[in-house]
Image (tube, rainbow, N blue to C red):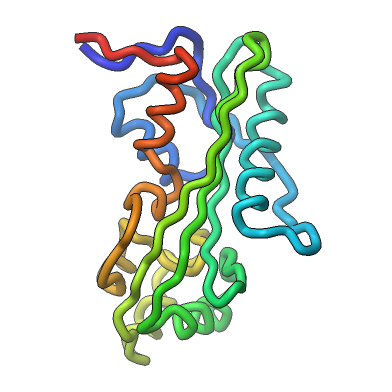
Length: 198
């Protein structure tokens, strides 16, 4: 009993959250991070950005393993049209949390599933709206002194200590973590990559 892939699956990401989510499904896969430049293009919209990076990440690895299914993904946090990436230091993390405090922001994740030998390419962008409670100064200082904010877009982890900032999520919880499992499983099924062994 389990999920059966018809060809090997490679996750083209260094994100431990994405790996954790795929492992929850019981999938057997390999992790080969893609070192893709994540710079924004001029006038690039958030949805365009995450889709482009997801596809670039997947394609870079798919060229090396054309028989495999390769999954690439990218996640960003957007508020007032501003993209909040991963904070470089505690002051930047603090500024990001101040922007998010008491407000609603959007989380965009793009993912791409490629198998070059089978000429299969599926890509999709998923978004969720996340509402934060008001964050007090002592809460902010406590949080930015933890190691958690520094490899997370928007300086928080929905599945970690930062969970208590969140009042409401409209959309996919796993999307906010970095990989929308519902849509990824649908893509794997649509591509004929996955079957459920019952």
